[in-house]
Length: 148
Image (cartoon, rainbow, N blue to C red; front, side, top):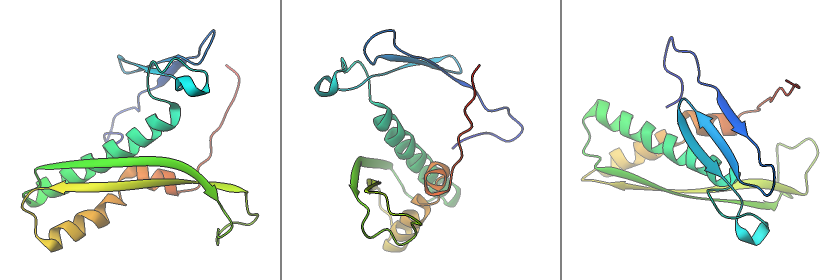
């Protein structure tokens, strides 16, 4: 789940589209395609950027739960994670200095398969919120942008 100790993080190289939205991504020798759905002008050649973000959260969640259950030798057979992203009105944003009109909301449903006790299931659901990608998404993040 994330960077390994004593290992340099791998760079992500993105080659943007010359036309349309189809974008090529290379990460450590892996090649991915990101696009937008046809309904918004894309060719649907791959997941959208928000779908990739959800995929990262879902993958990290399932990996974190697998690691936790394996260390404790719990009978977790499989984790499935269903995610959706949407924009909602931020009228009730208690922590906002200024209230934006809308805020991002991710709905995550975690399905735990296996002969787990109620206590194990409860603990795994607590651990789901501790996955590194979840922690990053919940924190204040800074993106430094410069021209290359």
